[in-house]
Length: 430
Ligand code: CMC
Image (cartoon, rainbow, N blue to C red; front, side, top):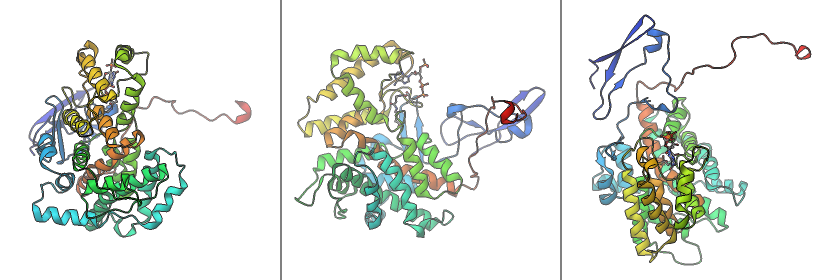
């Protein structure tokens, strides 16, 4: 990294020379850490429109090109050539594993798929109709009450084992959440299966009969997990980093990430998108909803459309649409009503001036709900699957932050707009 260049900011007679820093690729940044000391002013950037909050070497997005790289590798190549645990290894360790490393890693993950038996009793405390994300926030947060032997965030060995535990146990916990909701017994993991096949087994198997996951559907779900594994400094990842910056343990941090992911502007969009398609119901209603999406006085938004960073296309959406076709083909659902509706909606929106001028394109969530629904995953669980996959990214980002010697507690400042100092008038005189 070079820091020879500077940017000069002059304000009310004070001048600040601020270093300009380059990464390996992407926009340079102006290092404003000394700005307050030099000028007495803060910067103001709600929503982080122009702020790089950290250095990171994990994921790179070029929003104009529609490019997504994990550790330098294009998502299109990873989605076709690797399985989820290979990608998890890459995101976590920086390099793709060789065969020995892959075998060691998968064995390690598989050894941690069971949860403490007492944790299974947590579920009884929830209503059967609880939203899965509410359950996940609680149960994942509760892991910190069970794994006391890996909570020292300053110990690299503890950080590593916590990461493995989270990656290994999330499928078990997500499947238990589903089983609890439908009143079926929890299924213990089967470590002879692949990570994703085992997840499908725990979701759809029962103790009554043999269940063998369909390899085409396993591959499709595995691809969904790859596409969701990390995405740079998005809202939930930033939440994990901010929570972790105080020294909170990784289980608590991932739980905070799950809470943030739940929102419909973020991971909750896949559930919201499928509900929207159901609400639209038929191609004949598309124009009416497009009109509503464009109306400033209507809160309706086209869910699964738009992205803060992608302003051309979301490469994950392209891969997801392809996966959608494969899954529907495998299941003989080529004429799926919602898929046809989604295609029609996408076409009309992409030809509409409003969406074109604002550079609003389908994002990853536009097609993921249709694929997940076809796989038999209930709508309310879609964001839980996202959380399962993103745990890999969250843990890598959290680990990177803890190991960063420049890391400080995250403490944003504010532009105060409230009352100035005033005296309290006693209650009887007010
Ligand atoms: N439908 C209609 N109008 C939209 C939409 C949409 N989906 N998205 C953005 N706009 C409009 C928005 O009203 C604004 O208009 P104006 O400039 O006239 O005020 C303009 O486009 C820019 O949008 P913004 O909300 O300022 O952009 P943002 O970068 O703050 O928000 C977003 C990005 C993803 C939150 C937003 O596009 C959105 O809410 N989309 C729908 C929810 C969704 O699909 N989220 C999933 C994102 S990808 C997966 C993930 O992150 O988890």
